[in-house]
Image (cartoon, rainbow over all chains, first blue to last red; front, side, top):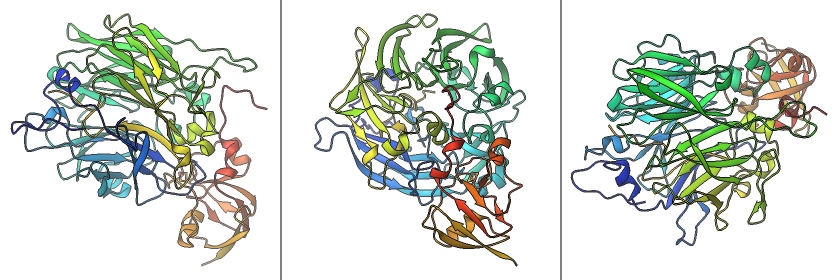
Length: 453
Length: 106
Ligand code: FES
């Protein structure tokens, strides 16, 4: 993707509206992994050609293997985004690519966009020694050259973890938070600088979620159910909200892209509900706005939850998308009335309920999981792996089949979703063996990276 | 320093010589045998293997539940041999650790 570079400007776009008018994405990066499979090879960053005009359309065109085995590449993020648009001295060039299982952090240089190369490695021993943090997850740049990463555990794999800061040279600068009383676990975070707020969610401690999902851990209170609102400048937790039984395992958090808004959404994965927050009279209010009921499967002892594992919002703040990893459907909601989201599209991409079809002759295995949306809101990309140990529990056949990467066409006029039959990236046919694909980003920014200050 | 022999029954019976001070995973790596791992400190089960015969010391194991320990699973990143042993290694030894809690167990 090309970005309009005028001498005035740094990376990204002046506003969400400007981002929507950018050229369409031509390349997509995704993490691809072998951890937890029976292939002993390093995880890698795959470059996928997503330009319909290209002869290599819908194919992996480059692979950057990591120098170590066993990382579990998972989420990743940029060194700079639209929050540095006003600074011509900065560019969106480096990817910060953590291994959630190894606790190692890679810095990848994308100067050559099709063929990124490794720039730097931060070893887990150094991170542990300086910060007592492990299990890196979400990456956001901070508009001042620093990068912040949510860390889900300490050196022993216990909660609550914290937030790691990297300086402009990607050296460890310490921990971000000054006061975190009330935080029991960590997971995702997003900040909205005009409102001086950061919000974070809770998965569990690494020693709980690494080995796999166990209902006994839920019963014992070892999974999260709180959302935390932080004073961004003071780096202090100011308000925690307990979502209760209806809000178990709140994962991905998204503020609206409009930097003036205090509204945002979070999906509780296990309870399979979508929640809306906003600030009213200085207080953060949060309420449940969508319920996905568990489904009875014949012969199974307890109803199966949908497990909402990812969600995102279109750049114009009009549509919200979420994936039901266990049921297998991907949904589009009109959030024009944010307290009453309206279901406008639904498509089946695998899942345990057996409602899915095929794409280009491929049975869709796993369930829809990580999402990324084009800046214009018309193309939604989806991969089907969640986390290696959990994949092995719920979708053991992903080991031999590898992941899919699909592209869904989104009707942004009337609503509606349809799988693009011309696009299917088969990670089952990778040179080293079947791989599992996870988070996705484009060189020019996307719907889950950019923040406007 | 005592050393023990461990046979990997599902790696064509390959035999590895391990000192008591070394984790089985580290010894395998030193011998150029690629076995799966993740955290390397006993909290994630990616390196799990099944002890078919022999004795290991693995008190730093965190990630295995009592019934999994009872079923002779060991975590190779924190396991040390205390006798000549036989192991089944890799993902194929681990499937019993991966259960969908909603699906009926057969
Ligand atoms: S590598 Fe994680 S428990 Fe051994």
